[in-house]
Amino acid sequence: MTDCIFCKIVTGDIPSDNVYRDEQVTAFRDINPSAPTHILIVTNQHIDSVNKLRVDDEALIGHLFTAAKNIAVKEGIAESGYRLIMNTNADGGQTVFHIHLHLLGGAPMKHPMG
Ligand code: 5GP
Ligand code: ZN
View 1 (cartoon, protein in one colour):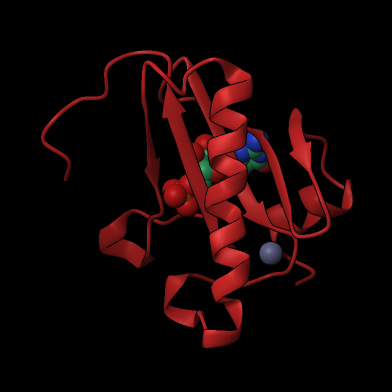
View 2 (cartoon, protein in one colour):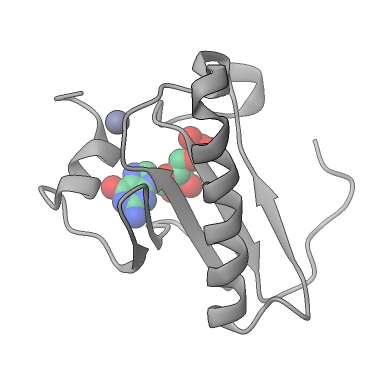
């Protein structure tokens, strides 16, 4: 997608503070963090949102979660805890339409959600 911010981050056309990368996903610090640790894990391949997922994407989305867990360990927040969020469309609060998982931690998360 030529006009997608996260596609440009994946290709390196927009600078980002990367924390992890492999052949399927890229992770970088959120530009406007909502928690002491706020990392976005994105698929290297463009997918608009959860609404566009296909059965063939299941392994990729599983990998996104495993990457998030490994990053949480590396960031030192696995034991204290963290929250993983994936927003979808307007009511979900999605602003970038390239699938991404928010990894939030480093402080107690607020309740209730929503
Ligand atoms: P959403 O609201 O779609 O779930 O999350 C989009 C996230 O992307 C927001 O938390 C926002 O701060 C972050 N973001 C938007 N543009 C950029 C950018 O250019 N670089 C980085 N690192 N984060 C961005
Ligand atoms: Zn994209």
